[in-house]
Image 1 (tube, rainbow, N blue to C red):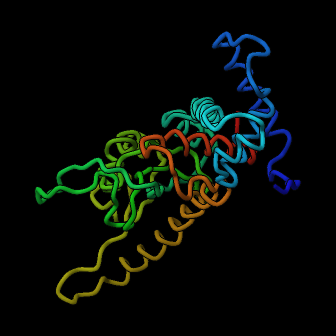
Image 2 (tube, one colour):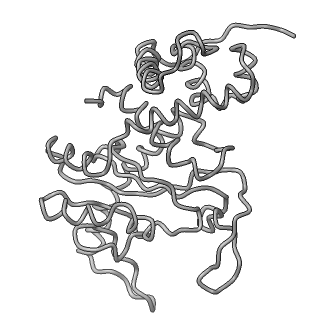
Amino acid sequence: MISYRATLDVSRELVRHLGRLLHTERRRRATPKGSRALTCFWQAVLALRWFCDRTDPAALGRDHGVSRATAYRYIDEVIEVLAAQAPDLHAALQRAKDDGLAHLITDGTIIESDRCRETTRSVKGEAIDLWYSGKAHTHGGNVQALFAPDGFPLWVSHVEPGSVHDLTAAREHVLAALYRAAADGLPTLADSGYEGAGIGVFTPVKQPAGGRVLDVDTRTYNMLLRALRCLGERGFALLTQRWRTLQHITASPSKIGDIIRAALVLVHFERGYLT
């Protein structure tokens, strides 16, 4: 066996911040001092390695001198602690208003996962994989998000199965609050998958049937809306490229919501967005 040194691409301030959250959690659980195999600092390092590089928990356990089961348990604890710090929808919208944002961007994505054999019925009555996305052609969970005009992620939703359409997931998690925000002067931009979302959620006008073309004003509207809305793609990139564990989840897909909310807190800390 060959040993080698490696560098974790996170700041010491982030590790210390996470360590403090873990320390608070251990005190809440009344964990006896000295009963854990790792200190809060090194538990934070272990979990951030998993977030950054998708390092296998078995390898993490070996590197840190704990069992594979303990490594999994430590990662789950970090996910739980971080996800609890994520802003809820109303807090995110209130801060967006307080910051004077001109508009918001909403979008959804499929976070890939291993196949889950849970089934459901399609609109045609056929048995399908609940967690399979026909749009993305992969298994995973549907997550909705809100972004600032520059694409910075402000909020992410709980996960829905991959077979759930973006508009259906948005109705479940975010649209009701966006109507109120629009009434207060904070509209939302979205892609054509959200057509029919409701007042205050602006989507492109689709090409009419029968070979007809849109008039010049409508084409200009579509061009401007897409030019503004496309910056929302940056938000998911900030999450999935920085925290590569989101590129493919090997845990239960039902955990995807907690994992991406934990990653959102990490992004907020690194960008100085935490209050």
